[in-house]
Image 1 (cartoon, rainbow, N blue to C red):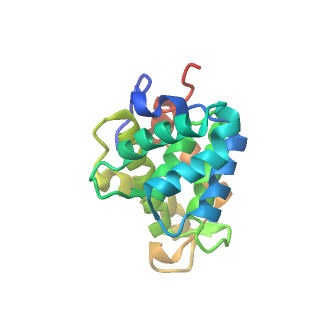
Image 2: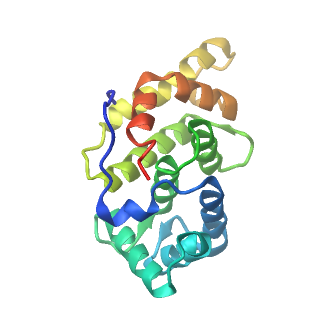
Image 3: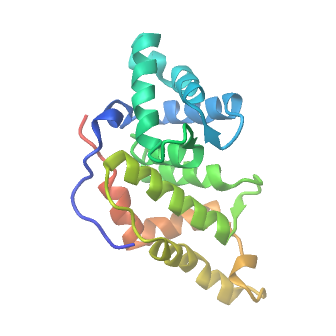
Length: 202
């Protein structure tokens, strides 16, 4: 995936949605669960979610927030199919939020812990990294890492566990939240991307 230096330049359509407090990111997750009918979000669903989660914090009118939300929606909807990927949307806004690195990683883990078991498998790990990078790529207008590089990093989290496990295949091993956080916080490439998309000036 490669390491990065410096700080990402977020596109103008998303500027108002960076550095969001943890409480608002959690509100956005709750709004998603209450409003969305699937993993593909419509414009109306995005507008409703952002209105519920952010209107009081941003202090803008319904009309203004809907306009801001529409601009953000079109930034994510780069294939122009009138839907945005909810996983990309939620995890990338979390990564560029004002949360700590540990809070960001914990939040992302929760999104991809689909069975709510407190553990994820290799497929969920790959999906998490791919979704995060795809969403961040849209926010910054940059070229994403190769999927093969993302998959290599995801597989790295399971290599040691596979060696220690009695299971024969890496796909049969799962990762706890703490293991996920520790691996991500120690991986130079993930750390560099978290830094690249973190600590934006207010």
